Each structure stands twice: as C-alpha cells, then as structure tokens.
Image (cartoon, rainbow, N blue to C red):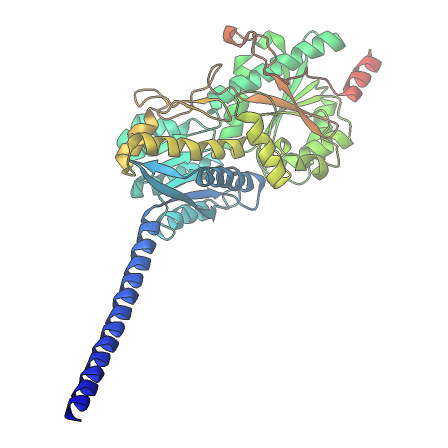
Amino acid sequence: MNQDIAVCELAKQSEKRRGKMRIFGRWVIASFLILFVSMGTYAYADQTIKIGLIGPMKFVPGEHILWGGTLAVEEINKAGGVTIKGKKYTLEVAKADSNEILSLPDAVSAMERLITSDKVDFLIGGFNSEPVLAMQEVMAEYKKIWLCPGSSHVKPCERLAENYEKYKYFFRCGPPNTVYAGRIVAHQLMMVIEKVREELGVKKPKVALFNEKGLWAEANIENAVKEVPKEEFEVVGQWAISRTASDVTAEMSAIKAAGAHIILDCVSGPAGIPMARTWGELKIPAALIGVDIPGMTLAHWQATNGMCNYEMTMQTIGRVEITEKTIPFYDKMVDKTKQNPTYIAVDAYDAVYVIKDAIERAGSLDTDAVLAALEKTDYRGAMGRIKFFPKNHEWPHDLVWGPGYVTWVDTQWRDGNLATVWPDGKARLGMKDLEGLRYKGTVDYRLPPWMIEYWKNKK
C-alpha cells in the first residue's frame, strides 16, 4: 500500500517536471522566434538602399523622373538587387514633389525633407537650372551624392571647378550642358536651313528665336546661334515667354509677319503645348524646331489636338538602336505608362543603374568610396556610353557628350508618331566624327507641307 502511494507520488512529481520542461521549451522556442524575427527585420532594414527621386511631379518632367527611376529600381530588384561583397541589398524609392517650376523655396524644402525625414542614401532628380543651383546648397550641407537628370546649364558643374570639395557630390547624368546642347540645336538648325534651300530655293532663310525666360533656354539659344555661321541665316527677332504661358497667339502672329522660315524654340514648361498648338492651328509657314520638352511625349499629340504635326525637338533617345538597351527600355516605358520616355525619363533610368554600378565597384555604401567609383564610371546605358568629366576639367562631373558617348537625337512628329531624324549621317559645322552616324531606324526630316505650299505660292 505504502509502496503504491510512493509510486503514485513519484509519478506526480515526474509529470510536474515534464510540465515545467514543456513550459520552458515553449518559452525557449518563443524567445528564439522573437529573436529571429527581430534579427530578420533588422537585417532586411539594414540591407535596403533608399533612392530619393525628386522633381516637379505635377508636370511632365517630374512624372518622367519618377517613371524612369522607378522602372530601373523594379528591374534591379527583380534581378537580385545590388551586391556588396556578396551581400544582397534591395533598392527602395522615396519620392518628393519639388514644385520647382512654380517655386524655388518649395524645391529646397523638398530636397531637405528627402535627406532629413526620408533618410535617402542617394538623390536623383532636379529639372530647372535656377532651383538646381539652390538645391546644390542642401546637397553640399548634408554631403549627399546627387545625380541630376534635368538641368542643362553649365553653372552647376562650373561650381565644382570653383569649389570641388563643397560641390563634389553633384553629377550631371543628362542632359548635355548648354554648350553641347547648343551644338545639337545648331546641327538641327543647319539641317533645316539646308532643307529650306533645297526645297524652297531660299538662299538665306530667316529665323525667329522663341524661348521661355530662364538660364538654360537663353543659353541654349545663344550657343546654338553662335555655332552656325552668320552668312547661313538671318535672325528676324527673338520672342521670350513665361514657361507657364497659356496663349502665344500674338507671338506666333508676329513671327509670321516677320517672314520667318524657321522658328528655333527652347521651352521646358507647359507653354510648349500652346506654342505647338497655336503654330499648327494658324498654319504658321515656318518649321518649328529646337527643344520642346512637352513635345517629347506621346501625350503632346492629344494635348495639341494633333497640331504639333511636323514639329521637331531634340531629346535623349528615340525608338532607334543607340545601344542594345535603348529599344527594350523605350518599349517597357510605353507598355507600363502608355507614354514614351522623355529625355529626363531615360536620364533618371540610367542614373539608377549608374549608382548601382558605382556601389558594386566600390564594394561599399561609404560616400567617399561611391563618389570615387562614380568618377570612374564607364557604363553602357539606354542613352549611350556614360562617362563623367574628371575633377580637373572645366566642368567636373558633367556628362561627356559626342559620338561614341551620348549624342542625343532629334525627333519629329509624323501623324501621331515620333520619328527620329537626327543624327542623319552627315557631318556639319566642323564635326567630322558625325559623318556616317545614323542610328538604325532613323528617317529623313520633312518640312511641313503647308509651309512648302505657302512659300511656293509667294514666288
């Protein structure tokens, strides 16, 4: 009896011990899971690289910075992310509306928020030159690497020549600066002067200069006009408008009255839409050429009710084979957004890949290490071969322009489509290395039919 009681007591104590062990086991497992999840979360956060995309998001340029940059991030993450010494990192996007077309202070504030609140690792964006100069001060204060795909004026890169240590974090990944852009526009102008002579028999065509008020536009026009010998054309006047102008009827009527055969424009803001629409509606008998950023998008056709037909504008790429990456990128952009990429979209897209390339070559996220790697960039992107001028150049960290690197193209509206018309294989204005450069898919430029009819009837 006593023995049975003892056995029962032992059994109870054993069961208690097993219960305690079960509780302890559950506690260990739970603790391990909490630790695992915590460590996993920490590791994931630690392995994220945040890219800040900044631009005027309510307008075409900002929208396309976001589209191009986001597409590159998605592609890179899908392919496995960024690798640093065998460790994988995921890219993350933080966006900011700079509102820089309308407000310089807004642009500065948006830049600072990306750095201080969103804690971005790298910056891509910026559009107008004046706000970009102000945003550079924020970049310099926080020592944050910034690839700018929008501003064209030489001043942001001239600042590096003046004070490299302060502004060395700035790289222009497009467009070509106003000196090189002026040369592209000059080649465009010369090509059309030749066409006017050939088809209309006008020996010295008259040119009207039409630009928005702003550093880049004024410099582009000035540099383009300087590049073409004065005996080739005659300037009949210059008309300057606000980048947000909604009515340019008076200016277009004055240009027609001046007898212009060519309108050389430089417009980045929404004024590009009424400019092209009014030109087409009034059938101004002059070729509309130059730089029209709204005119770079497929949406421009609908926005102008098709009145932009035969307008020509320069931009980074067309649907031609600049590199093996150009057409795939172009088609992905159209498929994803139902819009073709403007210059700033492909510049932002390539900028993300340039940062990835630099990080992986540096083997680090350290700012100085990545900056040194960026200075050695030699990357084949959708826009062409990307290299930056060295720090002892007059424009440090500026994009190298020219055949074999990034050339840009000229596109012309043809019945709802954008056709690439330059480079056309001809060397002009002393640039012999343009001889034979004609990307597969390029077609010949055409004068507007109503222009040909008007001037032939005037004879």
